[in-house]
Image (cartoon, rainbow over all chains, first blue to last red):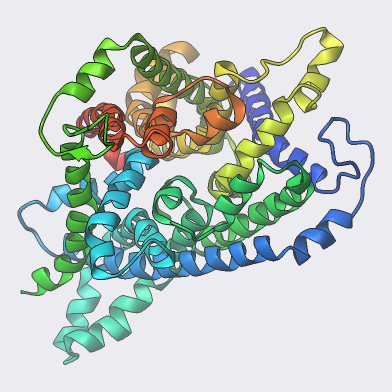
Length: 270
Length: 272
């Protein structure tokens, strides 16, 4: 333990300052969403709820929001299946190349987004388009799923490592078949890890812009809509409100995921 | 047989949809574009890489990108350590839980919105200059310093968590033993805490480094200088020279793969 009083005080001060650093920009943008004036000067001259009303009526933003939710759900679904399969395989079996799997799943998120984006862009135009799948929601889902797998995989693998194999063996000894054992014994142990992983994967997808830019074609997710509207000064007050909505929507799943599982690494909740 | 069934879908996906396309990308880096017709010439050449190495502007852009990524990593490590240490070793259980959530939520909340917030804060008559003006100072304005600051802000939580997780595994008794044996604060830090925390810092740096290397949106919004990502992006879009974009994109990939291999050797993967 840290004994010295001075050291504790210093650490506490540093922690508070860091928290201020993290939250001030979010607070500033929130205040701007109530900005009375169209210009972005500080201090803010006056406050109004006007733009919140206008933003909620904005069809462009609303369509983009719906697209983002669809893409997030689709990507989370695929990542859930693929990540679960990979985690089960790595946990249950010893095989050649086992160590490489965790390297492979982390690659899409460890490599710069622009590279992942370009690579997927090339695949889509050379493989998907000839078979009639053009750039659109589906390709966004494919792209997002690719980098969401790691979140599911890491969450689940961590949970599997903590849960004991002997309960499953007991279930099999008592006459349950493979499916029954999975349904009644394995799955309940994994449930919260799956849910937490899913929520994080959704938040990751909801937030993403770079890979999306390369896979979306004409489709607009919410981040893309925001980015495109930066160039239009008369949209600024609306963007400010949408920005705050995005912050809220991506924080809520994370909060729930955290409550479900406690403790943390970046890519997994134990 | 069961193993095959479990592995086939995820591996198939990653190998085909991802590694396959990465391979295509690298091959296309050796192609070129006919300057007259604008068509792809699928004939292997080192032309793109020669341009990268020989053109001073590209050397400068590479240097700037890697330099800022490194500066961001250092700044994040310095900022992250005290708060991670406080969370792991000083804070009460309840406080720790609150802090985890407080740092986790902005980590996952919209990247673009945070960059935008900084753009507003850093602009001429924005919050930052207002804050500094009583001291007769003014902010950095838009440029490399702003990019560095915003990157540092954006990736900070990615550094805090691995360090926190690493320090949490460090038993209190080790610290006590060190101080019982006469180790002062600094000595304990250097000889006991650092060896255990180092892989965690490396784990965090994977994110801070990689995320900085590939970003083109932050420089677009808070700077007027170019980063690797900007050049790559422009060559895909406006300039339409995909092979050159692919060639330049291999630079961060090579840097990152080397970095990942090194990180794995240093034991950083267990800290993720």
